[in-house]
Image 1: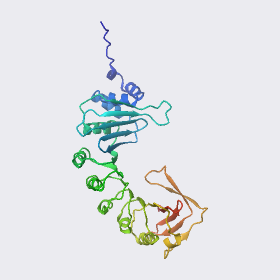
Image 2 (image 1 turned 120 degrees about the vertical axis):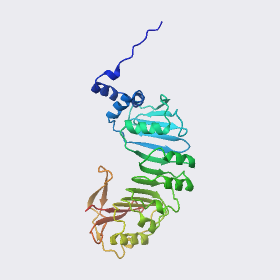
Image 3 (image 1 turned 135 degrees about the horizontal axis):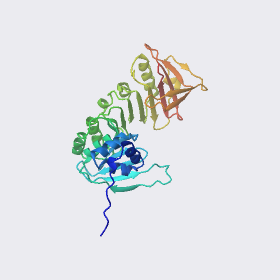
Image 4 (image 1 turned 90 degrees about the horizontal axis):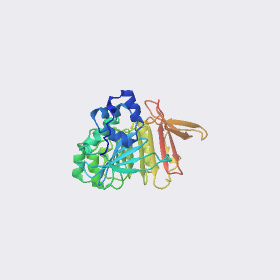
Amino acid sequence: MDAIVPRFPFLRLPEDVRMRAVRQMSMMEILNFSLSYKQTKSTVRKLNLGIDGIDVHINEQMQIMVDGNQKVVLTFRGLEDIAPKAEFRRPYGDQNRFDFSQFVPNPGFCFKHWLNHLLYIFNQHQIRNIVFDGVPCIQRLLNFRRTFDKFQSLLILASCPDHVAKEVLSKFRPENTLFINEDVPDIDEYITSNLDTICMKSLLKLDQLLIMNSTFISIYTPQFSSRDINRFLKLWMAGSNRTLAMLCIRFEIPTDSKMNQVVKGISHEKVPDDVRRTFTDSRNKALNWIVNGGIDIRRRGDGAIATIEIAGNNRDFNMFVWPS
């Protein structure tokens, strides 16, 4: 007859002892531990594990990704799937790195319950990124939108057809960042929101740039003439795009724009090439942009100074608005 191994009274241990023990667990063990009782769920939350964020990826399937030192990916076949596949991934620099998959214990959670559980135990107030890739069912989009409130960033990849991209844009409004990796026509109403950052691939028109009320704008475009850049700079100096801090326009092929054409009719000051200045990205204080030389222009009214440059072998037009 097999001996019965008594259960260890883990939850009766002092809280600091429990916390130290849980900190030694792998991400898989922590996730399993959090599902045991309400008390273990609260214990994991108190750890403040310091993950980078929780993302949701939508295509034919749905994934919740916990992005941290160790990554967890839960893959669902649909919103009501209560048996998601779990993948646990160690950091790329780990010599003992290996990925493995398993089905986590089934607590009867569907997608919404798992999402809320992970947001709670990892102390996340909202989803970081929602990524759309491919052709998800439109009805699934509507049902999916009801499973959460706010999220930081929306990413629409090139594999999404135009009609899906527009449906996503109409139903999902991010708090901070919009990233569109394809040229979607007729989306002016979606790029006028007070977003912190807009990154998009587009057949850029001057009117579109003027209605973007964002701090950081990055555009990948086939062409944008030196005449349009000149008009934009003149309008900026007159007071348009007042929230703009950085503009980056990258051309598919090197532009034939010349700086003398870009600043034609604009009062400006040439900064010597050996003058090196650091532009700090307000979204991430640890991220700095080095500006070598360039041309300074000044906005009328408040005197704000911006530096413009054509760089990257004539493939990039950059504009940096210095904080006052």
